[in-house]
Length: 194
Image: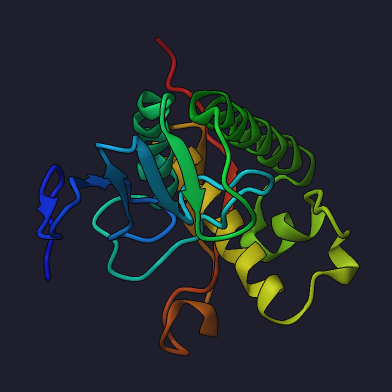
């Protein structure tokens, strides 16, 4: 079944409305049970941890920009009890959304500070320099790939706001064909003289 934003799920005895919240995944949605005022948040808003927001192939819009807009939307359901896909149910969606927005503001500031310190750097180089709850050395396997994807999402977001610029390096395998451009390197965008 495909649901558009605002559609009611045909479920007898319930008023379950789709709330479009892309970001964690391109097609993510929450479900609001209107009678009980409960919001099934899925992976969009979790009570204690920040969901991974990483670059994904074929996404219609940059995932971090979509996620931040979706967080602001979820804050409007503050009266609802949140039922997330992980951890525990909670109240206070507006406060939690503000905390997650502030987390991403801090992460963007950290990405900019690392980029200022390193100069032109790849996603890998920037990711290694960021702070991680477990420390970079303990981030391994799938978690390391998730960390790289999350850093890439922040770099794409900051590039979209004009704060960073990405440039392709010489030949290399990370961009596709062996004779194609190499990995993208990011550096602080330079404003044109006014």
